[in-house]
Every structure is written in C-alpha cells, then in structure tokens.
Length: 562
Ligand SMILES: [Fe+2]
Ligand SMILES: [Fe+2]
Image (tube, rainbow, N blue to C red):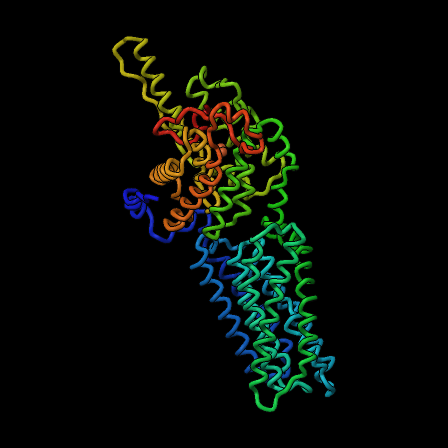
C-alpha cells in the first residue's frame, strides 16, 4: 500500500514528539503517587519482615527494605515508560500496590503457620508441604485481576514484583528453620521466583485472547497458568540435581505438581469471585463486565435491532474492524469491540435521519436547512450519552460514545450551508456578499479521542461508513479511501489528545484496510439474471444497495445523513 504520509508526518512531528504526552486529565500532581509508594514500602516491608524471626533482624530488615524499594521503583519506572497515559492515574497505581500487598498478606500468615507448626518444634517438616508452598502462595490472583481491570502491562508488572517478594518471603521465613536445610530453602526461593516470572509472562497475554465469560477460556487460562509452577519445579529440580549430596524425593515433587493444578484452578475461581469488589472500590470496569454488554440480548441492542437495524449492522462491522486493529497494537480489543456496538445508540432517537436506516431513497435532509441537519447529526452523540446513563453503561463505553466523532467537521453540511448563504445573497440581490458560515457550528462538539481505543473507533467508524458509498469496493479503492481518511483526521488534529503514536497509527490503518477488504470483497455485483438465481446465503448479511459516491472532501456517510 502506498504510504503517502510524509506531508502530514512533518506537521505531526512539529505538533508532538514521538512519545505522546499524557492526556491533561491524567496529569495530577506527584502527591498521591508519593504517598501510595511510601505506604506500599511500609506495608510490604512489615509483611515480609514479621515472619522472618529466625533471620538476624538487621540482615532481614535491610534485605526487605532494599527489595521493596527496588520493586516500587521498578513498578513506577516501568509504568512511566510502558504506559505513559496511565502512569499518573494514581488510582491505578494504588490498585497495583494494593493487589501486591493483599497477596503478601495472604502469603505471610501461610508461611508463618507452616514454620511455627512444623519447623520450630524440631520435628521433620513434611517435605510435600514445603514443596507446595510456592504454588499455594497466591502468585496468580494479582496478575489475572490486574490484567482484567487495567490491562496486561499492569498484570505483568505485578507478577514480576510478586515473584521477587514471595521468593524473599519464603527464604526469610524458613531461614535456619529446623528440619529444612539451606539448600532446600534456596531451591524453594528459586522455584517461587521462576513460577512468578512465568506467570507474569504468559497469563496476562492469554487472558484477552478469548471470551473470559466462556468456561472453556477460563480452563484455558488455568492450563496456561499451570505452565508457571511446572517451570518453577523444573528449574529447581535441575538445580537440585546439580547440587552435591542433595537428592529430593522425586515422588514428592510430582505430588506437588498435581497440587499445582488444583491451586491454579482455585486461584482463577477466586479472581472471578472477587473481581467485582475491586471494580466497585476503584470504580473500574473489568473486561468481564464489558463483555456482558456485547450480548445482543442486552436491552439497548434489542432496541437497536428493532428500531435501527441499519445502525446495528454498521456498528457490528465497526466492532469487528476496531477490535482487530486494537489487538494488533496491544490496546484493549474488548473495549474497542463493545464500545463500537454502542457508539451510535443516540441514533435511536430518530433512526431515519441517518443513511444506514433510510429505506426507499427517502432522505429527510433533502428538505431541511443545513444547520438543522447538522444539529440532528451532532445530537446523536449527546443522545447516546443520555441513553448510556439511562441504561447504566460503564464509564469506558460512555467515553467512547462521547469521543467517537471528536470535533470532526460535518463537511457536507458545511458546504451546503455555504451554498445556502450564497443562494440567499443572490436572491436578495442587494449587492452584499453571502453571510459568513461559522465552521464551529458544523463540527461535532467533542471531546477529541483521549484513549487508543477511542482513536481506533473514530477511524474504524469513519472508514466503514465511507466505504459503503464506494461504487466498486476494490482493494485499491478501499486502501486509497482509508489512507485519505487517515490523513484528513490527522491533519484536522483529531488525534492531538490521543496516546496513539505514529507507528501505531500506521499499524491501525493497515489493519483497518485489511479488515475492510475482507468484509467488502464479497459484495460482488452479479448480472441481473444471475443475481436472481443466486441463493440468499451467498449475499453478505450487511450488504445493501450501493449509494452514490461521496463528495471528494466528504467521508462518513452519516456526516451527510444521506
Ligand atoms: Fe456516530
Ligand atoms: Fe458510526
């Protein structure tokens, strides 16, 4: 595909640096971040230090404080560089710290209980129990919960932090413990570390590759999570083989692996049962809750199907395109998909004002002044937000509804208004020039997209709507259309507040063009006789009569309401 972005790239580079600045609403002072970090260091240090009575306290305290400080520093720095747009959301950082502290809170009494029950009485510590400790610690709960609530980056970071902290917790707790030699303690620490690291690497990525509401996907996550303790045991087992005069009972290791299976399933169930608590406390929306709204039996979807079937068909196509594009740049495909389903619900107020719902070639805008038509179009965003509030849609979906047009110009009606002013001046014939048309009245009221998903939705929506007006949707015509719309949106400054980088925009454009080609390529125009003979199943569900081509400077068909 010809990538002719050099012109707007120059302007773009002048407008912003390669790494996008955080959205102004995320720029809060450093106060909450500092307070949460201090609290995290104090709480985590206490939880790690308390069960380590057997370790000389200066050593234990020094180790604990150093490691917790290191973890906090790594978490902050990683978030700042990997997720600049979320770093300053102090509630997200607070949730990240809370999940890590809760995991340590569960782990500390567990370790203490095992040591005080078996280790300090001089008896033999049941080795099976010792081997099971790394997998009984809740290494899975924080990465899975945070992946669902905040995204895979947060899940991965929490998993890495917990791997280090759990490892230290075990080593300190069982240091010098009767019935447990130093080599076993060291191996336990290594097994825990590897378990946590593998969990962080594989689980967050697996979560969004399917529908979390389906039991089959939950089983898949649990099985993937099982790879973590297995890796931990394999590494520790290999190291044990290399240690001189050390031969652990292999049957106990195998038994521990079996318990790991149960532990992984149990922890996944705990996540499903407790997720809503964190959603309410931190006012967040998990992917599981979002997916509930993708159901076509949801009240608004039922209304859309009954009252505005054309809009439902358009929304469905946009959701497919947007989800794929979001997936290819690591944004949230679930949010993009569900947001796309609801982005035009405001059209329910008067479906016939929008082209996809017009039947029989009747277009109310033909007889309306341009200003009135523009008002109808602009109001579908406001009405959408009113519906969203009435039907209690989650905040992320409401933001997508509000931002899906940004402040885009309704170019068709803007030019029509100019023509009307010119015609009025000619009719008056008083020698005056036509009254100026205020451009702001023909722009959507915004705000501009402030998230990657909103930027993707804006592009997918515009491109899908415009592609419907193509006479011949050949791959070349679609690619040319997509490139044209991307350039216009970019030059119009619609992505000025969006954290999409230039590289991501290019990836999104390629993905959208590919999706659109695969959707539209089946719209073959058959010769009349043949078309009558074709079975209905070969005609795409969203196929509709071809519409006249848009004016050259026009994009979405809803912008002209025709
Ligand atoms: Fe819209
Ligand atoms: Fe739309």
